[in-house]
Amino acid sequence: MKKILLAACLTLVAAEAQAVSRYDPTRMSCGRVQATIARQGAVILRYQSTRVPGLPLYDRYVRDERFCNMGEVRSRAYVPSVDTKSCPVYVCKRPDFDRDFRRRLFPRH
Image 1 (tube, rainbow, N blue to C red):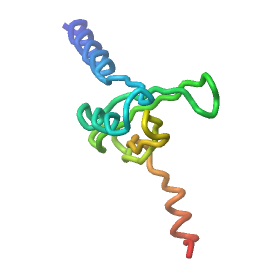
Image 2: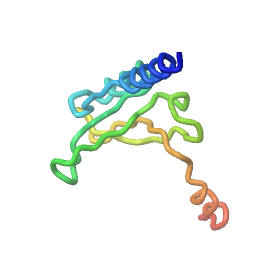
Image 3: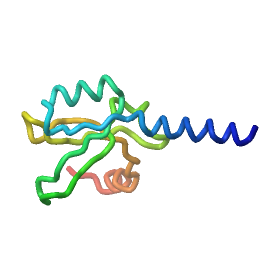
């Protein structure tokens, strides 16, 4: 019985990992990139670096914080697309509490 339960859990984990779709945003318009993320909730976007030729870049982009892990927040990011060099999207990141603390301690005027 334990073996069956373990196999079922592993199957669910593998299915969940396979559920995130992968796209190349440089072959899509910015609107289509944003619509794909909005429709699927979370996607992986993979594209080539413009600064380092041959270096692939990728990350998981999300519609909202429900698709982030506990303790993470949604943060704006930008990816290249067919019609723009910086299409606004969102990624999940851990908040940088040190930066917020420094901002309160040493406010800019």
